Length: 368
Image 1: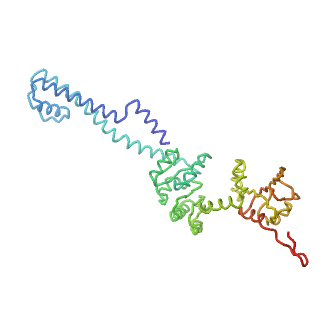
Image 2: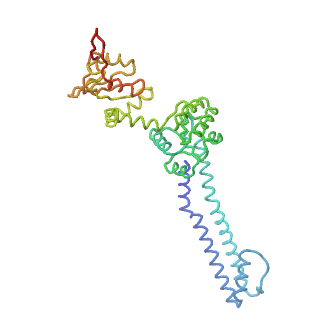
Image 3: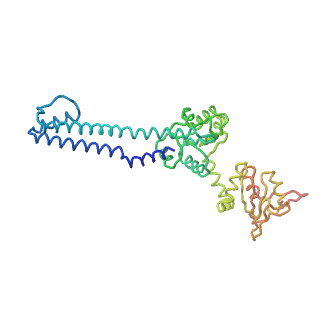
């Protein structure tokens, strides 16, 4: 990446000298020649003004002519030495001055070129539009999974943060199709637009879909009304951070067993992530004493759930556990039941937590 190239340049500078050091050395050399040449002319009987003027004309090779005759061997030696050393010093000084201006410009230009070269090599990668809070976390997860991605962000401050983290990035506006072309949208597999601006996300989604019909687009939405607009614009999936956060909090309140079960087991968290890719969710429920499914068999519970879930494990309150329980195992009060849901998480928990419904038998009612 560009950083590695710049590090190699820094190592070369440590050997040859940095541009600033070269400039200071050249200035010091010219200053020494100027002082000694001036002293030499003063020693020959010239006044201070004539000596400085003569040295300046000689060092800068102006060639206006001598202010006094150079008619002695001493003066000719002083003059020739000033010409040779002074002109050489000015050439070095001029080169060092150009190097100072050019060096940092070239570093910046070549760094950008190198970054663009790395982006051009990408294929089947992910484009992250926006490097805010969600973009930062998304980049961390993709980097951890060793997935190729490029960050597209217009803020120079955030681009610097992305570069400091070692991410491939490009400074540009994601709403500009030119920027999308530069980050390789034609070769990309996924585009995630996670800007906090709904209008910008809709526009980016629309542009990206026009540029690549095969692209999977995941868009962030803030307002509930934005979801339909993003889908209509071409987004494959819409993520509502506010809705997800509220749902998660509600889940912790309503189903604390699930939060504890998933939070304490890394293996289960990985399993949950894998199930989510297939549209499934994992839930752990503590069976209430008077719940709708308390006392029912596994077969009865799954039947009454209308296919919304199936039971994969039952942990008894007194210790025994049933992994992949058979259909005739009964669900008792206090059991921790692990479910795999086909729909929303609330559906499974709501069924178990619901009160028993009375069943009419003749002229009387009994609880089911």
